[in-house]
Image 1: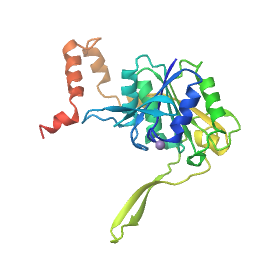
Image 2 (image 1 turned 180 degrees about the vertical axis):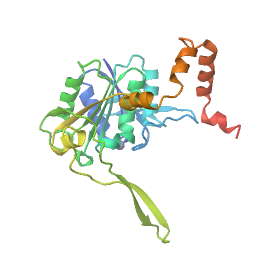
Image 3 (image 1 turned 90 degrees about the horizontal axis):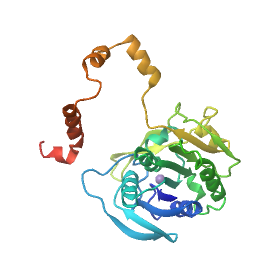
Image 4 (image 1 turned 135 degrees about the vertical axis):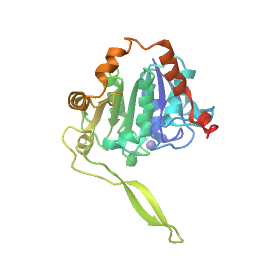
Length: 277
Ligand code: MN
């Protein structure tokens, strides 16, 4: 089995070496990760300049540092190393719980795997877990052992507490948000702002945050389809637009011309469009 290991903390983070060592127990490992830290970069991709890589070594493993985002690394890694079976992202030094998954570069690397039709697992631990991962390593092993046989599970977000008691399935905690703007000043007394994460407590039972608060390893299965299905049904029933006409007059399959037009419009990269501005 081919396991691509990536992260958002940068290729020289001790967390990625620890994860690669665990991954090597399950298959052949290649490390492809950003050349610098890209935490909180979310699912950004580099579309306005080309990507390149340089060979390096991480914990004795074949490794490539890329001048791009976590999502770039997974896309490039999967292209260069054909038939990747699994992408592991982490071990992130910092938890990725609740609404934090919207910003997480760690999760984005795993999400990029899922977008490519591969399986992705994001693994995060408290930042204070550095530099000694010996207590978390057996739990990382158990997570991979647990998830590997579940072949229809495409995307999983895993968070480790400091001293785990066991593994639990969870849902995303979305009722509270821990990001906020914190004002400060520079030496000239001009205003500056930090987009900061502040700790929140008291999460709902069964959620990722609740699990980690209770010292359980949290395993959250995620899906790519963000459609709000109950809302969509309600809107179609109570606020119908032109859906009926659209399905009646549109051919069962899109015409080649219509499909080609959308395809070429999507391919218009922002950089190309800039020339027209
Ligand atoms: Mn990070």
